Length: 391
Image (cartoon, rainbow, N blue to C red; front, top):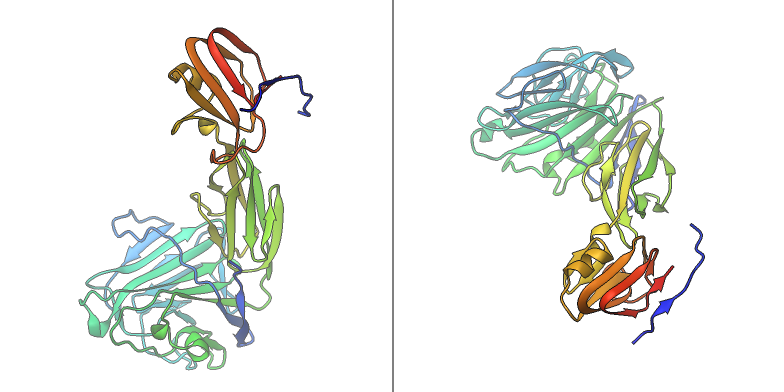
């Protein structure tokens, strides 16, 4: 049994990078990301059409989409305020059309981003979903489609293009479900016969990828460095790790990255705290956040003190010592964290209780003394204090 102490104590109030190999046509550099990304857009055919979201489907269909008014997209140094997207996996700059199985090296089709260059159809399922997202600014074009030869067979294939407002383009592919698929050459083309970059020629056809894959087209002269800033909020504490490079910080910090570099942001609450979520930078939820920023971005990590579990009786938690005492039965043990409890405890029931502490946050080990910053009054019953500091 540890002894009751009553004294006055003065207390001062998953490295992710782009691969080294890269191809270039002088205007863009193409590189493969070591970690594949995927945008969690709504992709809901029942959602209302707006300037920030649209959807269409069919065979050899296309739709012209106006880019956000706040920015124009530069493709091979030519600014565009709108794009045309077709159901065959292409984004056309300056042309309103649909086409498939064309050569990126040939002139005459128009400037194009061919995400999967094949005769495709979403007539019987899936479709093309376009959504404008912020933090960072980007437009996502996502296809859920079948090959024309397998139309209606429920062999959906999912792939997407992400256009960032600094001119960077990212292609993301999930493994294909097609039983038989061809690819005439997926990539980008200026339509001048010489300026083009092919994912297929440099990394293989997307139809052969056995795992999710992402590729980045970075324009020459684009801003190559962006800042990722982490701020902290809440009543608790914790650590945020940025990988790469593996920096761990528990107060405001920042890292600089090449534009489009995937970064994993991992939260870990300190003892007696909880991680209650992200805000900013398109980070949500309470798990890891994965970003590939093309512009400066700030995320906020909120850690709060876990007040609801700071006293335990049996397997039941209480938010204060008084609440636990008021609810407990005779001959009970109130387990306390090795923390400061700013409250006064009034013991006025004909019962005997033991105040025991101070535990770690999981109540598995005693690591110090709990401190009661207030008075301890006993007018009835008995209290056994096992390692308690009253001040």
